[in-house]
Length: 123
Image (cartoon, rainbow, N blue to C red; front, side, top):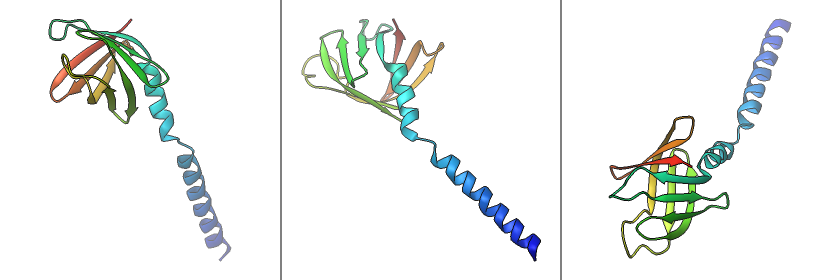
């Protein structure tokens, strides 16, 4: 009888440790590390005949210089980058949710939005 009690105690202890360890993983820390990768200045490969500069700031703002200059906000969640710009009455609209993939030791990021691919290189 004592051995069964010891096995139950061991099982509960293992379950408790697993729950404790998995509960310590903070999903926002993943988003935070991705945000850190984005922060800085990026220049696009030619897009519609233009090189576009994006400056992702750690306060969640983004400045874009290209066909027109724009200021907006940005955030990431999972594998999605969301950018929203205030005034997009002229030129191409960059507001939207982009899937992204980093490469080249995080110095290149490929953004995809509605089948449009935009490659950015960190300055």
